[in-house]
Image (cartoon, rainbow, N blue to C red; front, side):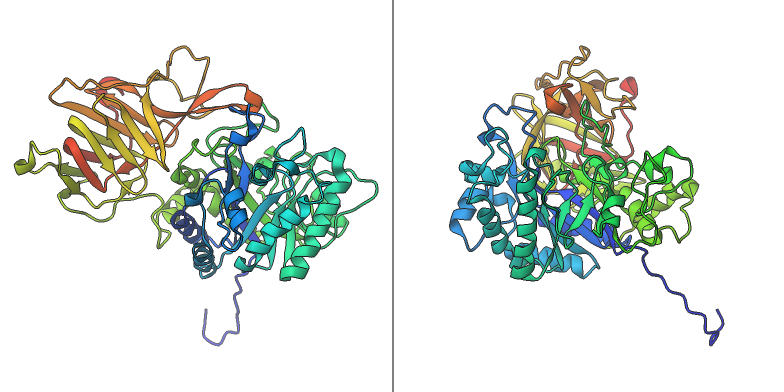
Length: 567
């Protein structure tokens, strides 16, 4: 461009809201992880992190005979209200203080991302009803009885504690999947909460689109509706009625971390963001999704691309399968490619160039691995004590002078190596191989266990060919008789054995002992409505920070290379 030509180039987004949601109400995510994820997303011009801070494991599945024992999470730590802290928070070590949250919030803001915090009510709020059981509906214990005189004041008490923490113009009050027979109560709740938040903190309110067929009341037009499913809301009607909307239509936006919802419809929600639904919206080849496209069934029922009622779009990663079904890093793996894809289409909208699908995959891999100031892929970049490199292989040998000393802890200082990898260990006895992300241990009794996010996952016996169904990646149905899922015990009588661990997102972390397949690390997942039980893969990083115990050598290479006898 010639100097003085007068040509001006403007790069501005088509939509202000270009976001991702992470379900921290059914799994704890550390501030360090959330910072890294925010840093990663900001590289692709994401503008919002929808922080779903509270929720509970579904009451229609799992060991839920006693609802008080069902997993529920509230991720923020009350500091002014001691009774609330004791009642609302079940695991104080899995909460953020105000200082920690504001540090996270500032970290994201400096990178152009606003945190939109959500505190869920009157549904999905087992954290509240465990604290105050008298507030629950008699037949649905994770729903508030909004006719109880203390229900709304209790929700407002919670918001009064946390509103001063939130440096944002809008907050999310949830209001999702409430009993449709109580429509008037629901609408009164939403409108009263909208007034409370606006008058208390001068902030706007978002809710999930929820079908509440009242003939008497309507939700305030001040409320932003985040559409997620037809049958719950109609974004075109909402736009015509004067509501602002956000596109989180589950057909394209939803990820169910680790497993889909079979047999619950609509199913399946992909366990990895489904890129084909962006490239081929509504199943139409080369019709690329962008935030004005909501309806995948009736292609003519969409909001106009220039509609001022449409704020943008948010993809959503949900932990419906429970806190132990994924690691924090597996959540990243699931949306790693979806974040740049959604960000790109929400930035361009209908006005900009389409993505070139042929080259997109290579481009996203190139840029994802180079997003600065984070290492969520867990690439090993620096060498440490006793470590050298040969091609793509990392090698560590126990010093000769410490050959028989299993009490010394050696510092490798490499952190973790993310999938895909092959790690080969020469093992002489019990050991611990650790990093901040995971620990791999071998006990005196021969039990090989990965520990991640505080949860142990023992090696279990499965068929070497099981878990590779393309329709249900990583899943082994409980009626598959080729896999026992019994805990495996390694032979400890040998002077030395070779333990090979491979890890990839679909196969998970698998083990061979002296060249023979031994099993995989996995988690039992209850199916929707307690049907179609299955076991699912766990894809752990290779922990390479410290080693102690009976390991003589460690070799780690890129990609998955099982021993040739069991490849």
